[in-house]
Length: 70
Image (cartoon, rainbow, N blue to C red; front, side, top):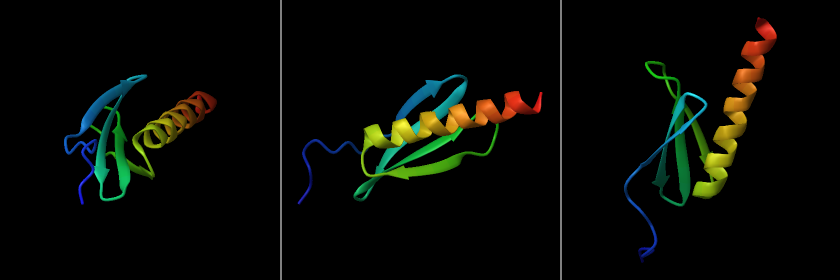
C-alpha cells in the first residue's frame, strides 16, 4: 500500500554553500550532500527531517575541520 503523503520527487536544499538533495528510498530517506562540482556524500535516515538534520550536522563538522586546518 502506498502512502498518500509520500513524495517521489527529490528536494534540493542549500546550506552554507553545500547542495543537499533529499529523496525517499523505500522506508528511509537519502540525502546526497556536496559542494558544487564535488563528489557527494550519502546520508541515510528514517525520515526527511532526520536526514536534513544529520546532513546539516555533517556540514558543520566539515566546516569545523576545514577551519581547524587553517
